[in-house]
Length: 469
Image (cartoon, rainbow, N blue to C red):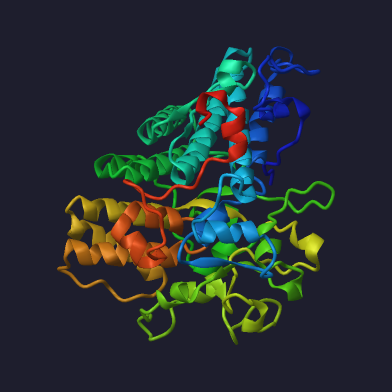
């Protein structure tokens, strides 16, 4: 089976020099690079490549109530500042995430600007541009939820005007996200016979639904969900979603895929970051007791919700390769993330894990639908959709009639349990509002008029003349 793997090439890195005030120079220019279909495909593959090694977990998990930094107490201390909402603009983790995400955007912008005028099959050209627009929308979706107002860069970074771009409002960034996704769905296929892992129309509609949900546009969220092709279903066994090969599950709407290649690092290094030291890992992103405590509901047989032990390691519970988990492996909390752990021989091999990173799963789509229905005063319609997700975990039926507020609490907790350590929780907490956020994150949270945002890195404000303070 042919899978996507992306290549590094110098021409695509010309976008990263944000400090230049003159047209960029190099051996390749856009004019003489974009000359064939194969070059266009390589340029598009380079956008996917930029997704490898991202640090979204620091914001999605550690900044939430589900995890703390973990690891050695003195290691990666800048993550602690994110965890306690005191990160300054010179925080290295903030700078790294910003740079990597704008690299994704820059590579996407190159494809969007240059591929349409190329001379090859129009259907393939449109698809490649659709992929680029999805990936640009995904990058901006994360940026707007971490930083709020950010520069909305939509052109190749080869002029001063394209590089020095001021901050756009949150609403304008969401408008661009929605516009990119609305364009992408016109040209993306339902699936691929080869090159599996590329963006599909289902992924684009699902991300559009999430964007609308975050904007509290519930009617548009439901419309987008209704347009997702009927080709997805839940994986029968929850734990199987977090094994090598799970990227081909019918539940996977869009996932970052990885290759085990010891010569070129294309593996999932989250395996190293989250694993215990007895496996050569760094034991970061330690789950909290608060996360464990949200699993209060027993299955219909009186057992623990199976998603708990599929998601994290707990003292005395089975780990991998016949090992039993020890709370001593996690100095911070006694728990570690299990979803990305693959039993590989040593630290280097573990960085070549092929366990996928799910960006959107069908369970997420169902939970979005249940939430949008409930918030639209259609609670009786929401509960059966919610129950589909609960049924896989063998949880009891939610009894009806039920109030909108009570249903909201159940849906929110279901998202937390179902999507734990897939880097969603902090963003959910923020959109639930100040009362909820302060109740789970504490009074130290520096809430503004709308929500908490992390600071734009100082490297950007010093280099970008349009946003200099």
